[in-house]
Amino acid sequence: MKIQHKVTLLIVFLLILDQVTKFLVKTNMSYGQTIHVFGNWCQIHFIENNGMAFGVELGGKTGKVLLTLFRIVAVSGLIYFISLMIKKGAPVGFILALGLITTGAAGNIIDSMFYGLIFSESPFHEVATLFPEGGGYSSFMHGRVVDFAYFPMIKGTYPEWFPWKGGDSFLFFRPVFNLADSCITVGVGWILFFQRKYLKTL
Image (cartoon, rainbow, N blue to C red; front, side, top):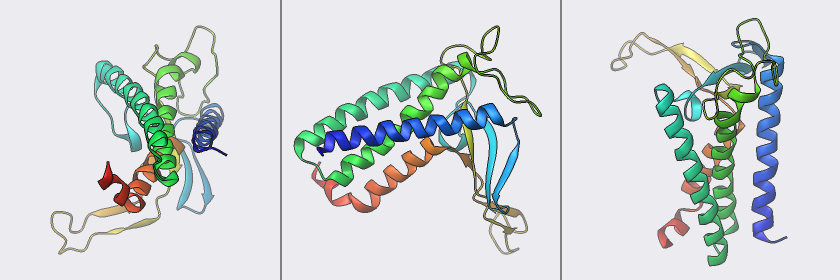
């Protein structure tokens, strides 16, 4: 199978999986609800955010639109860069890693662009409705990203001698994220750890 077909299948498969998991969470869980999968360290915890990966946000409606537009430009640039790398005969691992980053960015773009139009709000103790009467909870490009993967694996307290944080409690891993976020993280990590030699030749 040609590399362009491999990367296309990877992107399409992971995009579908990302959206299926988000739809399942959005239409079966109320905001803030938690399902314990493996004890307390592996949970499905439904929240939404207006911004970037792992819950980072840009303020206001203007920031939201700018972020979505930036993502669209970034995805377009990544698709062009992938086609360029294929023509140059770049390593398969590098191209697939770029595909993962593209998938992650595109997955969260879909939420931002369309979820406000097709879903009702997700209030506490209630489940959202798909295609509600009267329209969704927001306008085009103002949807919120669905996050649900939560791994609070280690809880403890910083030792008293620890600078600035001594005596404070800590939690690892705190962020709540989704499959799209994971694709970006894995793709970037793959490039940094395994494709550094190729990066030097660009």
